[in-house]
Amino acid sequence: MIKSLWQMLLTEHDQIWATTLVHIKISLIALLIAMVIAIPLAFILKGHKKVAEFTLQIAGIIQTIPSLAILGLLLPFVGIGTTPAIIALVLYAIMPIFQNTYSGLTDIPDNLEEAATAFGLTKWKKLQRLEIPMAMPMIFAGVRIALVMIIGTATLAALIGGGGLGTYIYVGINSNNNTEVLMGAILSALLALVFSGVLKFIAKNNKRLKWGSIIIAVILLIWGGSSLYTHFTSTSKNNIAEPKQTITIAGKMGSEPAILINMYKDLIEKNDPNTKVVLKPNFGGTTFLFKALQTDKVDIYPEFTGTVLQTLVKTGKKTGNDPNQVYVEARSDLKKQFDMEYLKPMAYQNGYALATTQKFAKDNHLTKMSDLNRVNKKVHAAFDPDFTSLKDGYPGLKKIYKLDFASIKSTESSIRYHAIANNQANIVDGYTTDAEIKKYNLVMLDDDKKFFPPYQGAPLMKAKFAERNPQIVKALNKLAGKITTQEMQEMNYQVNVKHEKPAKVAHDYLVKHGLI
Image (cartoon, rainbow, N blue to C red):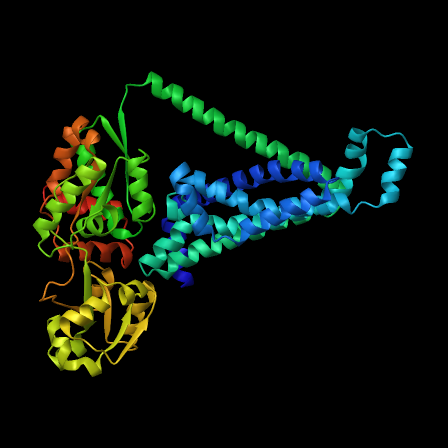
């Protein structure tokens, strides 16, 4: 494991550094906003005990709300990306900063307050010479607690396209890559330790507090100023340079979306050199990504026909089993309900599948799901929690194929393949293009009764965007009917197991098949 972590650091150090900087940026912005809100509020309310206690109660209630719920609530109002992540982090950070600042101010001995008044100090002078210096250790302690909490919670930003170190964690979980999970977790922990250590060092004595505060303020001013300068200089450069259309293509988490969006980029830029494509891989789940498309945060992303009918559109009909019919219905509903254009799908399907070991399949003569009925009591399954409970998962499968397995373990998706590899299960659910099927040399059982709905991938965009960019539509339609299930499985294997770059794997496929 240490070797693989080191290898990842050597080969992906630029990307790791960039991702770490995004994580730091999100965390520091959230911390600064929380400080600007909480510290002045504590000073204002130090003489109003009941109001201060009420404010603390509200802040405490906010902290009890799960972070994912807050992100979901913010989604309709502020969209996706870093903004909702920062707002959520600010809400979580306000309480410890406010509480510690308020405690530091109210714990100042009364005799010192009386002495300051007796010496004729004004409220401002009293604040400057007594209250702030006395409360500063407690304020810094609150800031330190808030910062550690923010850095850890900021990993959730990856779920809504905010980036940061959480990207490695969630991609690693989805792709069963423990190296990426550890990379994200270790770097997040190190950031928390480093920043906490710096604040602890500064808070040791008043001299350090004074000079440390000045240094931090200068660093923040330089950092903020350089960010603004970069923004305005890049804007002016763009105004001078020859105009170029820039479009944004995003993908869900995992290797497969990353491969597809890199294919889209190569096809578009090869077909039209005046179009620049910006990629946003690992942008989040279906709902977040579709919302980003609706709000013009992204221009294109790959979506699956089955997902469209079951998650995105409102339809009173049951999803059929004919791939062409499902696509036509999905395309029609997207156009009617959202004014979206859904291009022609690729050949492969990334739908549910049941897989078993070569040995278990051979010993029991298993080639299709109907065969499982003969060996019900021999089957020990490991299923994803969703597959275990959803009607288009095992409950429906059980009814159609008359299944009654000896045991079923509900495990997270990253664990079930380990279970079958270690003989803790002999049947697992998965997706037809999973790299683990090849990695562990598993056999996919044929869905001979066509229970699972079709899941064909195709580019999704707004209809207006498609009308304005016929050259992009033409370029992307080169993938229509291309890429078999076996080919996509192999490409996922190259990325997840062989650790090839998605961009390289995508480019190699396009070149091999004469598409660019």
